View 1 (cartoon, rainbow, N blue to C red):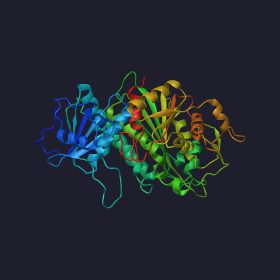
View 2 (view 1 turned 90 degrees about the horizontal axis):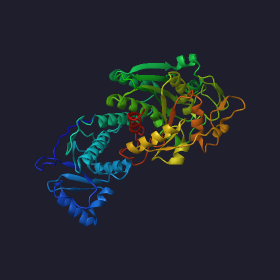
View 3 (view 1 turned 90 degrees about the vertical axis):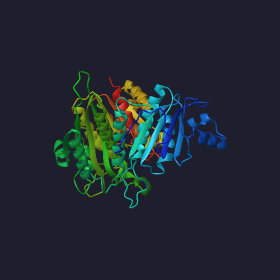
Length: 486
């Protein structure tokens, strides 16, 4: 993890050896005389050569070598623009520096006090999450992790504790998601979670395969029984915040399919590639729990993780099977690649039995959501309109944007079955993201609920503040949402 050093200095002393410098400025037509920024003369020459105006730095960050060989990157942040766009500009400016594998980065922020605070928080978070290196197994690593960062121009009384918590949660989610499927199997995943729970002081409980079978959790078992080893489980973690009269009890639920072949409805190669990331919803849930713990968000969190694999074997579930879920509903199986809603069904039932004030579930659930939105937004559904509005606001403030989809009752006609209480899905998946939400709604017992279909879990070239294709989308959004929950 990145060590951080922050200093309250108005400008970088050019006598200090600072080989990699990030300069963050407000949007300006010209630099005030009171600003003494690193590399002002090289910057002016660079802009002249490129026929650029100074204000264009708010759209296109630039970098150049300074007189003594330092690499400096300059960016302007337009505070009238959405946070997502500010994050994007910063990420691109920081990338110039990280390409050289520095040990440290020096950040200088300018502007009014409020601007410097905003810029410092954004820059510290963005450097933090991109300075770390995700798991890889190359004999010669492409890059090394950043060791230190220094901040000039602003000092935070809490030493950026919230940004630290957000970064650690995001890195946990991305790091787990990046692990190959032969390393992160249900058994090894559970071992990692148990160790993390011990370190963080979370209560840990497992409902293993045999226990779930005994309980009648047929929806989860239908998927889990196809694996060679019956090491699947629903894991329950609990974090109790500091006592307070207004503390809400929130259930966070995550889909943890460590690899998804599609089952008997096997995926073609192009769609099976990357299916080790199908556990991303559970990784995001863990990242949220870690960030909320470190940031001391005043909510009690029950985290429920549905950990399994979707494989093919003589015991694997099949089309036309009739499955009995934990809540007693019978389910007609239509497509074995719709396994995510199956494992979530029984997990949501367990979560709802604890009578939380709110359930939020996270899952890389449907391809149709990515068809509908692409990978820049994630889709949300809710059984309460006010939660949808709060979710959108949290997306705007965090830079992790969400779009609300309908879930009217007439959609449920498509899930009517002649032989069971409900169909799992339709073979025609044009609006499967909506039908999946309608299906999950049957397992929450009317609890206030948000369903997040993580179409933005992976985006080529990075997204917002995050430079890697695995984005960790959902951690920042959830903390922003929970900070303002009433």
